[in-house]
Length: 305
Image (tube, rainbow, N blue to C red; front, side):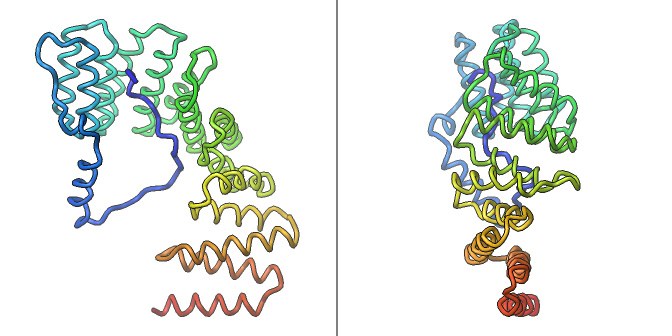
């Protein structure tokens, strides 16, 4: 992957994870141990190496978090082959890994200028440039570049295309273009039918949609996300919410109740109270007021604990 601009397929909005300070050293060690041996032992080749060898070394060093060495390797590549886009792509990827969006944009723009238009290589460069813009929350620029990268004439395909379409949906979601976001997510799901997060994202947007939500329409994509990834409690919650709001009658309420019971069994921590309140509301709407009261008593005990 010469562009280094591949996009992680599982990209949901708002799934930030915070790590306690005492865990950081341990996690850093675990991440290092989980890296391929080639990444742990990577070093920039000596003189006489080919541009491809230098680009691969820069990628491995970036993956290993050795960003200063990676950037120096990219500089050497650009000195050896100033008209080869690989050097600019490598440095852009390193800048992005280091959180320097401006640096990323500068080098990705130089790479794109050297890449032949209407090709898969050019599309990868556009995806990387879009990632740079998105990292600095320049949503309009990111949307334009993701859209250009996913244009059929560029030849991007498979997981790369699905990832870029999913990111395009994320950007449109940030810009509150709800219909455009759903269209992008469903396009990603069409390209990669096993891409559970694309279905989840489409259904989630249909649920929120800035006041114009359509829970009934959200049921189908969220049910597919649940089928593809039943291990995710988010999929259970979202499908339950869609079923409750979709006007599906008794059968939908029963299924929503089962899903919410499952969530309560599976999870804990600060989400437990919210999940129990959702279950109580679902039970009350279905006429099971006695059981709803018992669930609310459990909520009270948790809050007093």
